[in-house]
Length: 214
Image (tube, rainbow, N blue to C red; front, side, top):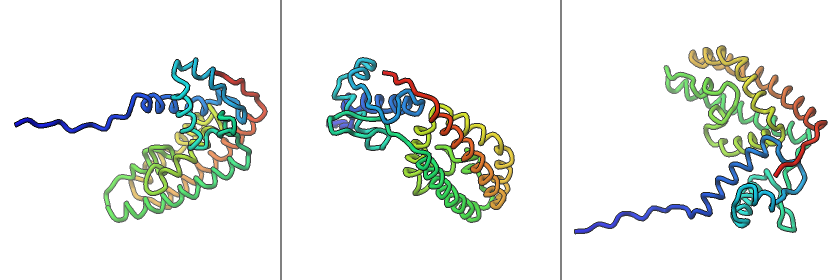
């Protein structure tokens, strides 16, 4: 008796390349390699990546769906631009989500005594592996997080690391002992510092021109 191996649903090569292109361009957006509010040079990008125009267009369309790019009537794409009020709104929304997830974390650990507070200590503030990556807000939080990275640029990673390191030990100890009020206080303090540094970095970036790249 012969058996037929199940057919795997393997994405076409076009879509695999599309994902890789979108990931690469997204990271370049986070590093501010492209000037905000200006159109991307699709011909230059096609040549730079050595890909087909169709594949590049699909990758750009994906980033437009994430609102990191803006689709134009002529078929082109512009880099998303951010005002200071946009950054303030994103910070406020992330703070609301963080507060909700802290409350959920408290209920989880109360329901399961002895469970280490790894949800908090894994990322003292709110990185992709921390509080905001859990629960029903994960997709929304990740999208907001990426917009914040796009709005701030390369300085973002250093700011996040600085704020995380400042309270990492205290937060890990509080999480391990289930000291939820102390966890909330430490996160609030870190969030305040993060907010100040992020807004300062945004203000500085607004005064520094970005040289577009291919």
